[in-house]
Image 1: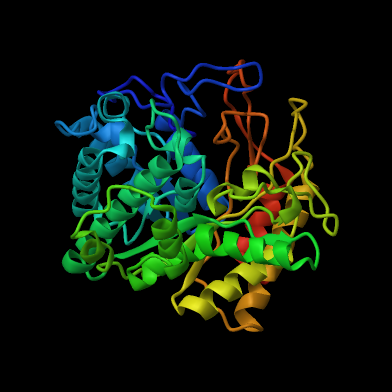
Image 2: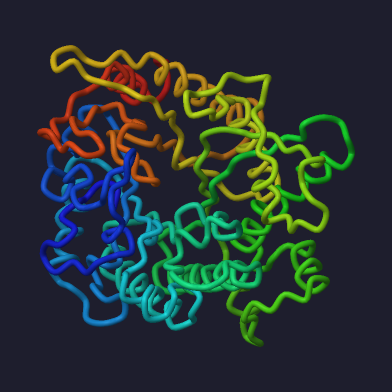
Length: 441
């Protein structure tokens, strides 16, 4: 939904994003950057920048307009064209199956992933896409930033339209998505042994504010609930013992059924993927007693005074990326894959000169060097590095003016302008970095 546009073309059904209106500082989702019609141009830019992998999403509502009914062959044909165009340019496609945009019909009828019917519908969609594209797509992700489903953000990204946003509901939606992931993991490994599938987190390392043991303990709890719990399931097939103890102690009812343990046990991740943008700090003194770990960050998400911040207040912490890569590989002994990394900057174009985004170059250089150290000094196995992103797109919260790309797209939140693609200074830097496989930084 952040790239394609064409929200009502060629049989696409509506998703929950398609009906969200623009706000004072946000866009609607009808056009995005019109990649549906301009993907050849955008792939040419990727090829010129020497990119050799592109992570894309297959829109559930474009392929199955109502989520659980007939497949839309025109929608599948679009992804055939897109994926074939990637391969023709030497670009390996990686597909993510769900990036927050639930088919609206399933959200209205079943409250999204609150229902096991939606789980079944999603697995049906996912299996059909893997079966159709397995000969061309060898790398798959199921849910984008899956650990967000274990926070209150779950109620914005799961097709949830009604309810009290309770903790048991959070756990139920999260559990349902983990079951869906596990079933698709098993399908891949049982059916297509040459295809790789992994889980993906939004990895924001949380540091303790100080040496107060309570704060150090809170930071460790956050890592366990929001990161280790999922990775343990992806790699070892079960939830964290600490999370299970909390569930039992709190008496949470979240639709656990007798065969669910067997479903989860089928998981065997080929890699662990994650997004990484920043680190943050927690201060336990600001967290009210009795707050569940899943909601700690609603009370304390502090600025790190030891590192610089972006204009959005996000910490710029390259060493944090090295720490995450090394920690994940040492702990789980499967390859690690950072599939999002970038910096949002407010940028304007004068209509003539390339935008000087030296800050973006500095950010990516430092993070690539941190990854290099994790690999060649710490010994981590890393499959690759994907930035967010090649090109300016609306952010996940619909802000077109928070720009991440090496290519400027000439539109604002409310003014589409001409959608012209304009390489920034960083485009030419990435060209030499990717062309030399990181030798020329």
